[in-house]
Image (tube, rainbow, N blue to C red):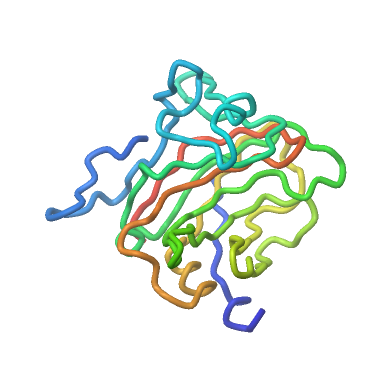
Length: 213
């Protein structure tokens, strides 16, 4: 990993269907909600999402829940990630990606607790070129791991299993991170978003949004 990549800028935040998204013409909204999990299908699975291995088995591990006025996706005992290609945004005008997640339980020695993939491009084989933002048990926050030829580059945005049972929010500059890690600009429109609960982990994923800087 060269010095340029180690200077990757990550900001941990303290703290839906694309609505009104101007694909052509007109001013872009300062903040755009990508997913709020308020539109599950008949099985309680987020509408428009798929499993990376099997959507049928993904529905056994991921389900939409509600808590007060908020909806979220719960992942438990998952062995795959879930993704959607219906989310599209321009990472140049809206580079800042935000989400919230909540860890309930994880086995000792878990490789990771949860991950959010920003899929901003595809390669010549149309395989997504992704940055994988990870909540890790032991890896240092801010550490970056090259994904190699076919894997996603991994960036640790949170380390340690605390706070347990509480929502925490994250904020990253996905456009800047992509350029720093992958060495080129992403596609004009993002390919989509993926989410993954770690093996044996129970974790919730809340609303996802992007904004201008």
